[in-house]
Length: 347
Image (cartoon, rainbow, N blue to C red; front, side, top):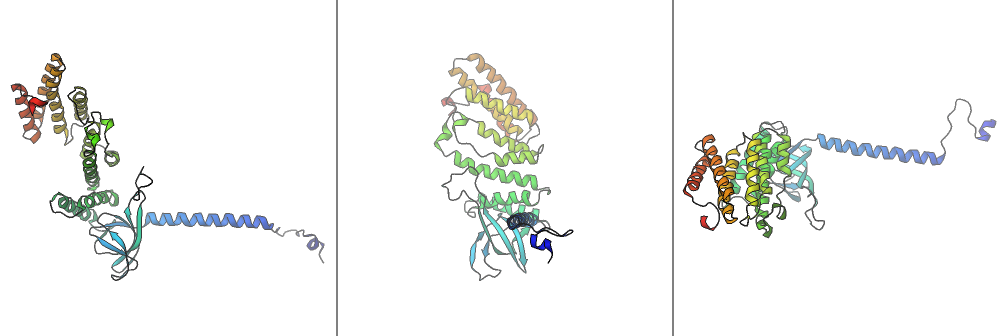
């Protein structure tokens, strides 16, 4: 018998066998690498999968059949990841609710909600659907119209907000993407503003003491579409979080706010909101005419009168027959006639 076999010494040119423990470690390492690779592959596949949304509500079912068990509902504008298709059905991962940021841990809706199942494809628009951006935008506009009606469809405003956002999300190179993102941000802003203004803190004088409207989507418009009218309009919305809740008859708030509006006009001369901002500044200076009188500061009262007239005349000269120009014309008349525009005398 070969002596090397007895001693466990490999012959020249042969491979040494790995000790049992090393084999186990090597196997665990390989399994870990394989598992990580599979996870990355799945994530990559999901990222590359077609995405879409519904322009009408559809039931999510366990299998592609109308009599199959119902898992939930996918409403207009919810994001859908298309996993598979079968004739007139699509197997989707429906993101019904996005997770909330900085939410209360006890809030049951703070976590996201996703349902995986089958939906009928009749109302499904994907990011490869011809004219898909126009279809989704059109449904968003119709939903927004429904929301404005007294007996419009329930939750139509939320539908419109999601659908407008999907135009930007699914069709980022579309000519409608910037407007879609702005309109989504605007609806969200109005919904949150309505809530903020019903709180007792809405009457606080200083802005930092009252509830703030979430600025995330407006700032996204500014970031993604700088230099556009939609970015200008988004920046105008952001001013609202800087305004006082109640001036309480003091000059501090209208002084600050007038400066903010004047600065906005200087930085956004081509903004569709420039005329409104200029009028807002003029009106605040007109209010200061009376406020400074109560503070026994006649000099600043006169300065405010002159500044208010200058700004109001600028609105008239630059914005023709617009509503803001006509309102500025009325403001000029009030100031020249000595009619107070703020305080008990104006009510």
